[in-house]
Image 1: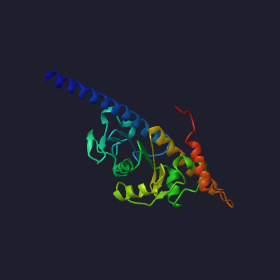
Image 2: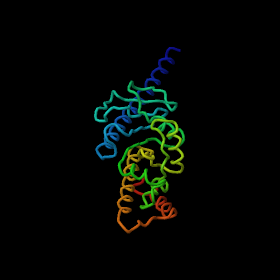
Image 3: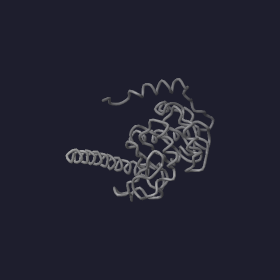
Image 4: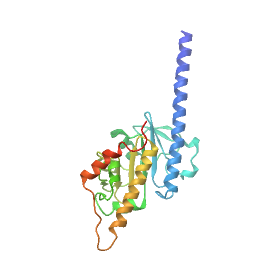
Length: 233
């Protein structure tokens, strides 16, 4: 019996050690992604936020802490109900939005930014005009979630509706949110969305000319081709 208890403790210790290592690796990748949003000009200061799901734990950037100051000991995590289970720093104020996306989609990583061109577009139209086929990489024409105060359940629900059958959306007078199976994928989708917004603003600003837009079918066809893009396996 004593041997069985010892074996049980060793098995739990091994599982705990493996989980801790996975969380540490995920936190390191999360911090690197958050810093990249700053260096790539997608956020200013401590605006925006990043999260990644590890099992039933969501690691998130803490509220109001410059990303270049985040260290391994600053690891911050909550469960899917929003209860803090890791760290002592207060999680991002946009936690309701992140958790809503994790609970209702297959997201494993989320990037939220205040990118300039995307935010500008969010104030002009209810949907980003399909000026480029990369909209297919986000599931189709990118919708704008109606404005709601940041950090609220109302904003979370508006975001979910805008994300229906999509992996990215614009947030009116606010910014962007994209998700993916990895932090790299979520970040790439954010960067592509900002680029498409910049493209549309540039093309639509030429006096006397109107940008040619793609049909929903053309965007959908591009999306199908993009599923197999890149190296497989």
